[in-house]
Length: 334
Length: 279
Image (cartoon, rainbow over all chains, first blue to last red; front, side, top):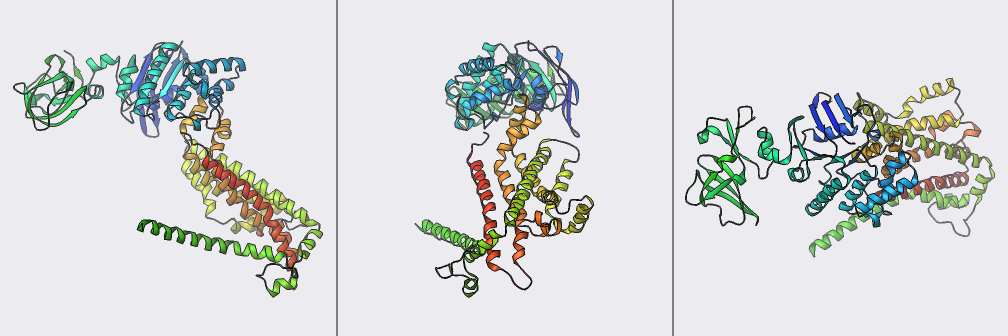
């Protein structure tokens, strides 16, 4: 009931082309995340799907019907915004009910849906309050509730967690994941935070400069990135990129190795170097090493290690986990 | 300790300056009001003293009220001010919404054009306006005044309101669109309540020059049945003899309605500031 097909979506603002031909298929019930750096066009793409912006070219269909000409309210979508965007002069109950009232639904049905949504999000005791009387986390739950009440075919989330603090962000993330399981609805979610993307998504769409760099499941992107951009964007800390000729490899222009796929030893190893800085996080230890052969390397070790700045160590990459990239930055499979 | 005394002197200085300004601003008003309650001789003998048992007199008010037309003048002023204000706020807010919300070719130019009126005094066009009103048969009607004052108030209203509307959360309007609100409902139900403090500011700035204006009533609507209060008060100012009691009483009375409107708008202003923000 909630599939989405985008065909060659283009969007320009004046001379600036923000989306340069996006093709995408989302099947019913999927949780899809658009991820990319600031200004990559991910929010614009979401707004085009919502109907808040008209695409310059291309076709959008939701559930098999072309919706390009329809206003947002007729597309069967609901959207959750970064700034919550609750109506300040309406109570929580009326905030949630407004969309259905506008659509002319019967009052008892509205009341029923509001009750169900507020139960699902534990908002029952706040129904008569106004947005100004709620905390940030509660406001975002109301905003999600407002979307749930509309019973849409497609949920759109525009960086919904960016304004929340770290602890609330984790809670709300779990809430959204639970919501997706319970409702089984199709969800499209925009974020610049790759942790949100990796933890929530069935399918991640990596965008950069208005084009799709790669589409795949979180583990596909992690284990077989299509190019250097995706390789560098997914994974934290970022993948190490080394000019291949520096380490005597001729099969690629650049090689990449993730920080967690390098091991270190005090006695022997592939690349000798000095520790510039060590971050002790308890569960992880992150070392920044200056090596003679490979330049600056980030190394992520699991657990606690007693390495400090100035220590001389040898780093050894896991050969099976080395990625090669060609002149254009494309991944060399093999 | 040193810091505390320093801030004390500073706050004293600030209060002294503000108090001095208040005295200067209120002085003419107070002189008008106290003298309106005095007999003619007492006004000239000691214009600054308060009315006492000997000098107290209501003769000015009696003259003004006995001249039955004064209620008509009040009514005219009130109609002109309130209706002009309504149109200025309505059209100003609508134009400001269009300028701040929609992308269209020539948006910036249009905004500049609409704001140009702030810099060009409308009185420069008096002759042309008079010709226009004569040609359209609107001389000696309140409509003529309302049209002119609406035109006069719009530039500042559009300028201030469009700046305010630009600061409103775009997400809120988009949320309204997704919930199926029409652009008119978004304007009326979401945007207007949020720019209420700005509307109150614009209302005050627009209302006072209209209420106090003598120029356009004198030129466009000097007939007996369309006189405004400021024009009406002029009947007591003669070339040779001026009935000061009546003039001062008329002016004192003229302050009241505008004061009431001001109180209403300033309450809106404060309420708007203290209401919860979007986030």
